[in-house]
Length: 121
Image 1 (cartoon, rainbow, N blue to C red):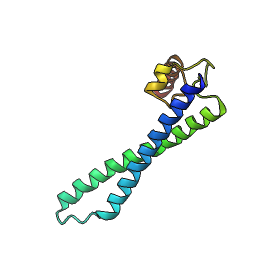
Image 2 (tube, rainbow, N blue to C red):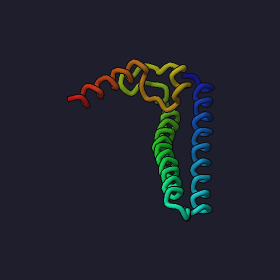
Image 3 (tube, rainbow, N blue to C red):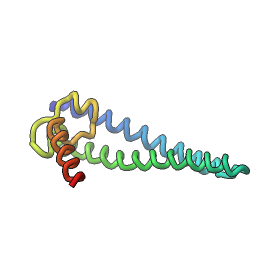
């Protein structure tokens, strides 16, 4: 991977991270400004369900932030774009689709098949 490609993915990851952090701040601000005080039990249950879904999404994004940070670290160390299993380069198309990818598509498929088999046992 050449320096321009690394710079492109670094910018892309940083923008993605900033977007996630912005959404998290907006959710927190909304939680602070709109306490759940619905007079009707059904409305309150509906609001609580909506917030539970929102908070679950934020938790997934929190985990995604760790993966983004790991990808940024791999860019700095020169390991970005290389499969952690096979050592082969990860295709640019795969990195474009999933910038936090750590495995080639083939290695990821093998990993998922093995995971599925061990889960079935």
